[in-house]
Length: 255
Image (tube, rainbow, N blue to C red):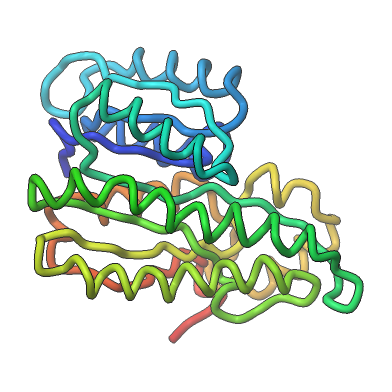
């Protein structure tokens, strides 16, 4: 799979799945716009991307552009995508990955925690997608990939806000797929299961072991497992796939 000549934007790129996606897309040849709040982490990632040897099939250094922004802020999103377009001239691939948790039982959940999760995980995807549609329509080619979650498919106690936001992403994915399919723009989702990230590292060891027992492949996933699937959905090889949710969960949820 080659993405040489393509321009990708990854939100939540500073760590975890977003970081792995940005690196993988760059290794496949794409220039990458890195969006997150933590500029220091983005600078370290950009340095790593620019030092990837033999990027794609061109043998030239990968290009990375830092777009420091909070995806909860609509004006920052608009400014961010304007700066990426100014740097690269187009956007071919969008990975809506930015996400947070604010876990609490529903009866005790504060409205502010509900709003923060929905704004970051779902509304930001709507806003970011709006910003790239013009470029994709102009070139009649585009790939929009939303990072949802197994908990958007099966729910999770104590995560009503998170599960709702991720389920909403699945509905958004299908709607966009139907709206833009005729213009050769696909929209798909990737639904990770239990992945080893900073978010899951904070969970109690007992919970991790119980989750492991539910995974037929017998291991916790890595961010790279997700990034490999994102790279495929961003490629020409996935050109006849849209509105699809690709499960990356080791068999934890089937069907």
